[in-house]
Length: 239
Image (cartoon, rainbow, N blue to C red; front, side, top):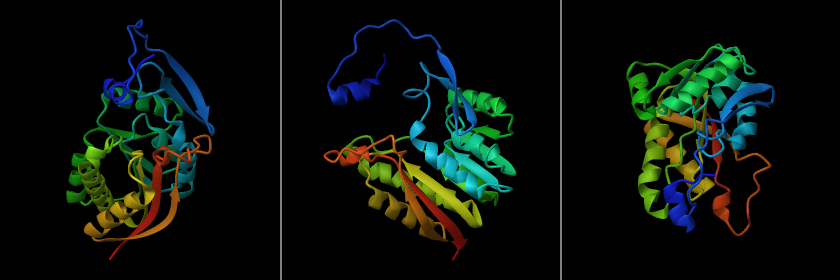
């Protein structure tokens, strides 16, 4: 039993003193891809099942291609791309050292090669852009930028900046898969933010799909924020 302090305060509940959890782990298989899951120490349950269909969908665009996974967490998209997706090369970036440790274990578990980088996503993309680096497919799946209404303006700026930097490193004709798990940001607002970011990067964006969480994540009619996950798929070209 555990709960983030700020979430507990917002939701109005309190968990009393409980015994410390050990580093409990499990190995799961998802569409034939295996993952170590740190149940007690990872974010929430230690693994984000809501991206299952999107991870699988990415593999249609990765055979023989170069892939960049930004905010990779424990390497979900990376391991899919490198293994089932038969990518030529996969680069993955995250600031969380513990998550990267598990991501490396996951790559080893699947016998795939991923070039992991411990870095801030914004800094990594800026450096990559300045160096003229490009990838055929870029995945952007950051943590929640808008957790409360008073964070909306700052959070949308973060989404815009991150996607502008990401759009700049997508090879001409390449694919950008960009996600938001902020329930307070609706799909239209996120799509418009991504579109403006692409234009700011001097790129032409063709959106060919907008997807969400897996079908085992239903949306409550009276709680639109429960449609929290937005995934925008687009093809990018130079203007």
